[in-house]
Amino acid sequence: MSPSSAAAPAAPPPILLSETRGAVALLTLNRPAARNSLSEALIAELQQGLTALGADGSVRAIVIAANGPVFSAGHDLKELTARRRDPDRGRGYFAQIMTACSEMMQAIVRCPKPVIAAVHGVATAAGCQLVASCDLAVAAEGATFATPGVDIGLFCSTPMVALSRNVPRKHAMHMLMTGEPVSAARAMELGLVNRVVAAGTERDAAIALAEAIARKSAHTLKIGKEAFYRQAEMPLQDAYRFAAEVMTENMLARDAEEGINAFIEKRDPTWEDR
Picture 1 (tube, rainbow, N blue to C red):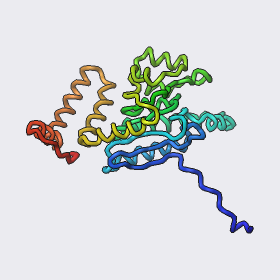
Picture 2: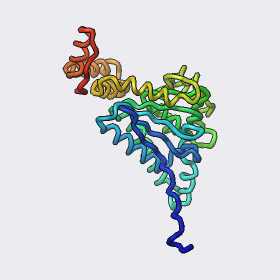
Picture 3: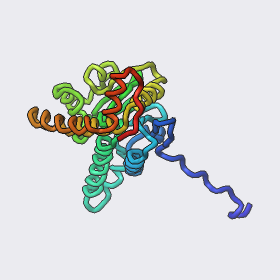
Picture 4: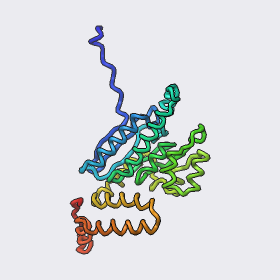
């Protein structure tokens, strides 16, 4: 057989799958052999996917799920370790990756659409950070969450940012200092996830939740999500002042007028997302 007639090697599978189901977009981590670790390429594709879906008017909610036995084991440690051979022992690359990952996590917060995690297996380190960064999370029974970097001498400092904004401080510190896994049921008690469902149903449950939210006014959800994260960082008095301004502007929106009139008239509202 001549070289030209030999079969070309199969292209590697995509590391991030994207599909739409009606008004809901589904982003699926697809590195199962690597435990869906967040490689440099996967971080970039997630960032690009979130940005594109945030600007897509046909998409009203986003679900992040994963293929394989786990949700995500965090950063790709083999990829990181390989750069220790760089002249600077990897300092420049490590800074680049941590910055890129932090930007991707913030893209979830900045995305005008609700973002929901569908979690199974384990979500550890930056994988746990990914769950904590999402607006909502549905977990399978048996799912576990951990920030175990301390076990390998690498404190989960960037996951800490999202975790400490979801979980009470002493519980977050316990997870960070011990590395001990937290069950799905306990994660719900702590506020890291919203709902625990039977194993194997978490993706459908997250999509159903996304579909329910997608029936609301997209304009209203965008206003509310942005305001939620902004006020959370403000002192109480400033937060109330800001929220009053947001609500005043929201009252003047067409969908608020329509929604209130529909409620008074006992009919379903017709949204125009403005």
